[in-house]
Length: 228
Image (cartoon, rainbow, N blue to C red; front, side, top):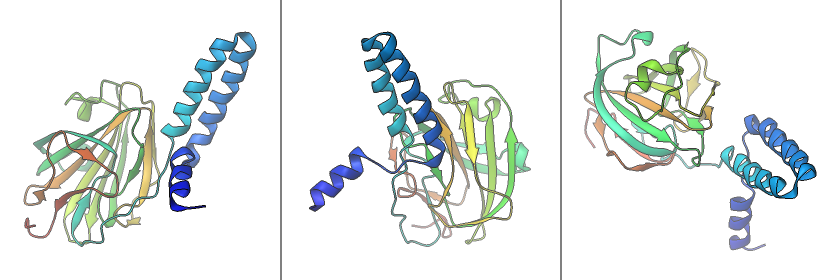
């Protein structure tokens, strides 16, 4: 098998996150029932099952081996970059941060990755609404999982998984006291959502709104004294 064949096989049959197999099985089972009832319905089910399969794809990523950088924790588009106070639920509301919001559509990879190397300080799950994740108020009103981290550079950052209009389930494997390397998987959000990253204001941001992110690979910012 040549390199082209291997690449094509990886594209057609990607690695699937373990969280997805139950849903893929449900979609496939419903598809079989629909096909028995009426074949055209079964064909629609096949399309939806294939979409579900690809939704839970979990490709390997190559994280830049550069010290003191922040990488994208999610695939998607940088929706906004705003200066805000930190999340109150993490006790960071007395500090000012630059918040980078990444919106994930239902077609993006939804596995989330640690944005930096460091130790998880806090984890706080907040029940809430399921508003459109593109809305600014989703950061305070929607269901979300908040994590703070002390990076190896000595800075404290936060990142928040936010459920969206379609998303109804946040999965987070990270625990307080756990050490992470940049780019390591820490969770996922099912069926469309958003991920916010809170960075100290002296950190140099290297992305712009509208830019496409690749989780674990795209460098968001440099934490080395605010210099590139």
